[in-house]
Image 1 (cartoon, rainbow, N blue to C red):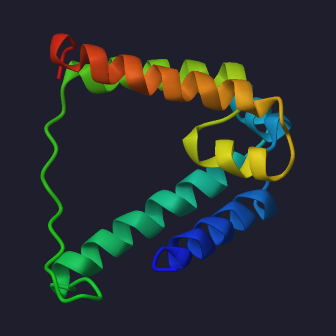
Image 2 (cartoon, rainbow, N blue to C red):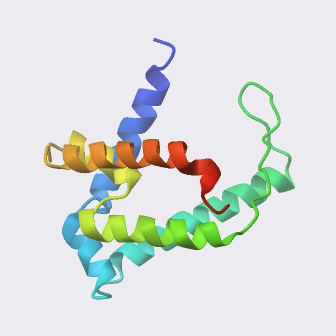
Length: 136
């Protein structure tokens, strides 16, 4: 019962992804072929919302609902970011899904996406296995 709020928020996030059509393989292919602005608009809106949220959290020293301070660590940029970003983009272009929409696609009944989900979980496991040997 304690975690129902996470289930509700996850379902709401999935509904937003479905309504924004960001889980559509065709929308993603349009984006990678530079044929439509739709996905760029959605991604740009998410970046602007995230940047504004972080700015407001830092500016007003906003705390969590339980009163704990929100700590946003500074991330160091490395060549591993570029390599990881390229691998992520290739996977996204090939499968038509990134981690968020994967669950929305499964929830919408596209069972073939279970293969992509299993591959993403396997990739995460391999990353955890090789993390110390990769450039960071």
